[in-house]
Length: 274
Image (tube, rainbow, N blue to C red):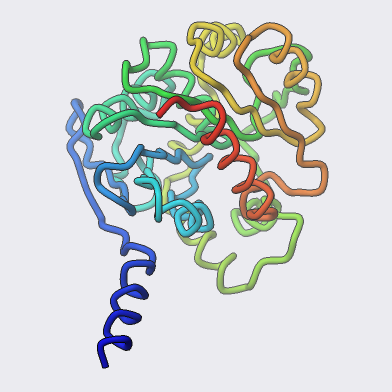
């Protein structure tokens, strides 16, 4: 009996922590949501999703890292369970939202931004960042380096439909239920606000200035279309690591979670100071 109780207690301790939901009020009154999982005193990994996406798209990383880290999945304004506001869909406000979230957290943070989340994160860094910042992980978006990505100057048209846009995030098949749930989440934000997020009124140099302004370790993870930028960033910025995902879709951390998680763990182990 004693052995069984000890085994049960061990199993309970090794189960992943249940995610807790939190809301905070931003300085402009917006009610913003995030989930937190993991030990209260552990370093925090703050995940910032892309255009219209909910924070829970990082569920594979939440499961993989919440044993040893505090995993924060943020819903930017208008996304996930955060409030759909009438204003604030620009780089300054979105960057400030990240800063106000980080200010709520204890201890050092590693911020992981994906797609539009890369720009939102760099906007926060451009505004001065935070003394709590221990490292940056930037996933599959331009950081203002050369060569510039091919611009799209036509009308607002991310995809023929939101369902097509969501399905296009992945190279590896996802279940219909998963795609439907993600499509529903991405469809929350009204089209005019979603369009604003695609028109940040700053030059490309804004993003490069931001990433060059900090000396914290950076992991830049991209697909081959951004390989040139990654190689130039490696030249221009010390303390940078790059990685290519040639066989994954834009949501590469979902398509190839084991490889991405291993890469992130190595970055945390060897680049981030305890």
